[in-house]
Image 1 (cartoon, rainbow, N blue to C red):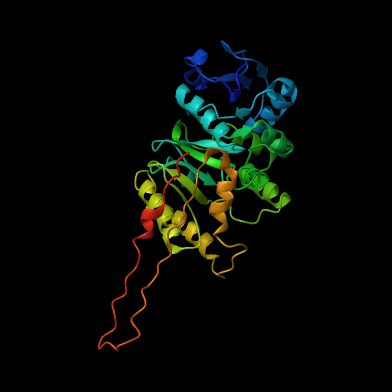
Image 2 (tube, helix red, strand yellow):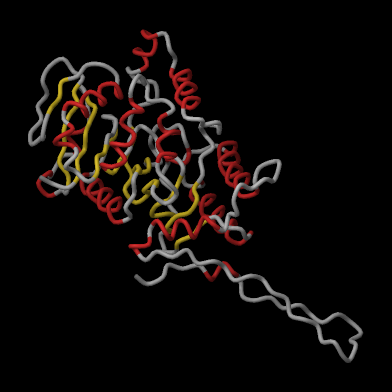
Length: 346
């Protein structure tokens, strides 16, 4: 038995055979929650659970029926069956989640993927980002987190709203999107699951309303924030109180967005949400100082030795008191705080 499990909610046309190539060399097992009519070919699967219906009601029943086995794994990934994956990157995804002790995560989507949320696209400037959002398309959960969120599956047909609820059942630094292990979403939004909503007379949007209202979630579903991340050069950056810290984050996000198929309007809205969060919104009200972000992230990833260094504060030299000068003395500032970020040696 391996430490990690992929639980596919899958049917005919599933792309999971690509993920299980070279399975014996990977660090994960796999299982199928199968909604097709015929029993599938599933070489090496730890189980196949035949279950008709939409994704999350099907997963709810599969998890309940096989929990004794599933609970022995450290992490469980529950991807849609239209994601194209490289097995070695899936293994790396699990390892990263375990090393960072993440509770909820997902691989980023490749730039040529069908997507809805810009935050889920691969941000090339980053290795990973700590976020307040993980899409229900491809969540990987620690086994404790999976047990925690299991009750939220009850009665939800589409899964809408769950990606707003689940991160709030974890905490800052335990939720992330992993850019170094992207997967490709190969089909457009609006798959066969939506017919089940039509049959129930309840739209996916209405399910989102009900789910969020039930859990006291008032923020817009697309108010999605990257609180910090690990850059490709090894520097750890985070939103902080200073303009310099926010500038670093926005620069990395903007550079990443220039490499993915998002419109100017999408980029403006996406970055604007970060600026709004940093500044406290239109009313300029902060529930807590943004300086907390880096310290809370450090606490979450303490075993890795990752450090979010703060930029040096700008300081001005004092003009001489005497003798009086005919013109003001020049003001000198310290070296640019942009240079002070860096990942401490582990």
